[in-house]
Image 1 (cartoon, rainbow, N blue to C red):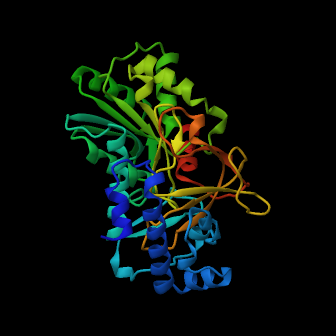
Image 2: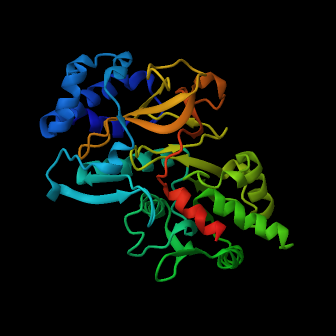
Length: 372
């Protein structure tokens, strides 16, 4: 069994202390793989003067030269033959710069197992028939490669599907947000009494419950086993963004879903390790990755509590050398003790996006539907 495979066998997905050596071995193996199969990455590492065997401790991870996420908007750099690619995901809709990521079967399976293991950790795996409401793009040619659509549809596998409704309906040319169809679907789910799982962009969930409140709609009482797992952020619609605690309170008031069952998720096409909120609504770092915060001027790693660029490090992908990715997101890393949920790994706080790029993410493209 390889070190990467051992990572997926770890029962406690936040047991960083006793599994550090496995992670470091997986990183060394992953770096060696990409250097042997990718001329660009081999050159990049050699110019930085770094070899896989140099990664002996967690402190050595900062030596791995990060690749900026924008790199993947312009270049395809595979470390496996193209014929081995089984999935291709992009990060935006019909306009704007697209980040893209390629997955061979091993990398694709690794990603699915990470999500499943984290769902199991939080008790979200279920054998009970479940209704789904997806605030994401209805599958169609225009959206079949979108990272968010793939992620949300993949989440249907963790509880048996009774019915599914996509709130962003395909109209033959693009997508429209069907708020009235969404509310009608929620009413039907209430009658059925089955647990409901709500995935997708938080802005659309907010718009739905706000519409219900403003039109005097009666509060619904969904099955109390219902849950939300949101993701994609409010990028491009920040003027309407509210605090997560306020959104969760509105969801509990109007839909009857307990606030503790409302969780947010963080991920990206360029770095597809999933991050789910703990019960205290913090994003802890799982055993599958490490995170550095880098100074915006010097790129030097910063201590806890200091804001800078998010730099994610993972041995997840064998297909593309997204081993150490420098994001456009500004973030802060916090000591686990500041949370109090019991998880012992640091947690991150995403505080915004740096720069004024014209590039558009899934959430930016989706938010334009609200403005229409």
